[in-house]
Length: 292
Ligand SMILES: [Zn+2]
Image (cartoon, rainbow, N blue to C red; front, side, top):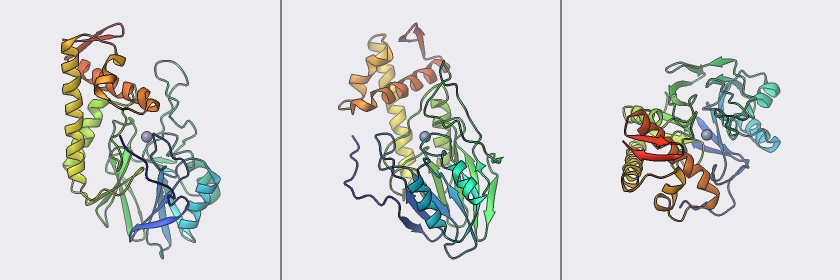
């Protein structure tokens, strides 16, 4: 289990994590967000312009802290890695306050109910420009390039800061926990492919939306790929023992789990099962899963 560090956390302060990057922590800690969402302001602090990555929740204190970190610089782009509610809702009010365009991931509005529903999504997100894989934004002394990394959500992007070799990884790879993959929008096969995509890159460091900077990125990603393969092997073993519904995997697979995270764990198991189904290795009869 991950334990959340003791307060005080640096909520509302601009921390310099590298010469071109300030980090501002939003006041939204939870079992899903760790100490909260981290917004990044990218660009020379003494320069004329910057970009804001993952503006976070629409909280007046947080927006004020972002604006303080920006200072007198012009925001050339408000960039979101994806549209979960802890990442993008501050984009619209920040755009309204500053006139900056919203540039980045595609909009994705899922149904409020029904099989495609997901209340974790932000329905207010409306980008001025969507970046495709390899497209980017450039300011004075900084260049950010989108790296499409679907899986956690289908619209997830990472952003590479070309000048330092850092990668802003959003929720794809985080400093405190593995990513949750919640079907139907989250897709385990895509997530694994997006982890392999990062293994083929040579980013020097990751700045994720939650948790500390990651200084040995490949080591972490390799571990995450191994972790998922292990989970998959565990699921296949349990399925081999007996057919069962999703809830029947949790006690063995997630010992000592925070009860608030049981729903997320079931989603993650479901994501693996759907991936195994797609690959012809598992099948279901109603809610009961079995091996093929
Ligand atoms: Zn997310």
